[in-house]
Image (tube, rainbow, N blue to C red; front, side):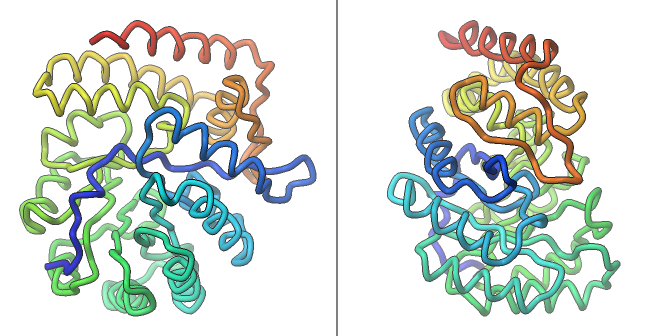
Amino acid sequence: MSKYATDKFRHITVALNTPFQADGSVDAEGIKRVCRYFRDKGVKQMYVCGSTGEGFLLDAEERKLVAETVVQEVGDDMNIIVHVGCADTRHSCMLAEHAQQIGAAATSAVPCVYYRLGEESVYRHWTEITKAADLPFFIYNIPQLTGFNLSMGLFGRLLENERVAGVKCSSDPAQDILRFKQAGGKDFIVFNGPDEQYVAGRIMGADAGIGGTYGAMPELYLKMEELIDRGEWEKAASVQAVVTPLIYRLCSFASMYGAVKAILTLDGCPMGDPRLPFLPVSADDPELAALYRDIRGAVEETADL
C-alpha cells in the first residue's frame, strides 16, 4: 500500500505537448504559455515528457528543462507528474531525482524502450526509479508501444512497494482497469489511458485519466468529468460520443502530435512542429481548420450540460 495520500491525483490530466522553436530547440517561453493556457482552462494536473511530450526525442538536459519550467510556472496551481522513463535505468533515476528536487508531485515511467525485457528486468527498473525519489510513482502500462504488458503477478509484487501509488493503464481492454483497481484498492489511483473510452474506463473503476488528445479539447474532458461527478453518466456518455469521432479525426493526420500542436496554435497558443520522425501538421491545412472549428463548436454545444 502506498504511503502517500492520493486523493489529489483524481483529475483530468493533460499529457503536455512540448513546444519547439523554429530551429528545433525546446521553447521555454512556449512551455510557460501553454501551461498558463491549460491552467486558465481549469486543468489541475499535467503529465510531462511522456509520449505526447515527445520525451524520448529529448535528451536528458532538455527533459530537465521542460519539467523544471512547467513546475516553476504552474506547480503551485497543478499537480505535475514527470515521466522519467528512459532506455536505461540510470538515466531514469537521474530524472526521478531531479523531479523531486524541482518540486514535482510525482514520477512515472514506461517499462522499456526497444529491448524486449523480462518481468524481472522491468521489476528492477521500476523499483530503482522509486528508490531515486521520495515521490508517488505511477506505473505506465502501454503495451502497444513498449511490447510489454503488465501481468497481474508483477503488478502484485509492485503493490508491495510503498512508493507505487497508481498505474496509467493505456492497454486497450477496459477490463484491465477493473483488474488493476480491484487489486490496488480504493486509494490506489488508476488512470484511464485510451482517450476513446474515457467514460467506459471510469465506469470500470478508473479514478481519473491521462491523455494525449486532452490538449486539443480540454473543456470536453473536463465536462465529462464534471458530469460523472454529478452522477449524470448518460450525459457524460453523450459527450464521449462527440469526443471519440474527433479523436479519430485527430489521428487521421500525418501525426497526432502534430495535429494537437496545430489545434493549440489555432487557439492562440503557438507550439511549433513536432520533432522528426513525427511529421508536422500545418495550422493552414483546411481539414485541420475544419476540425478545430468542430472542436470549438462541440465545446459550446456541451457547455450547458
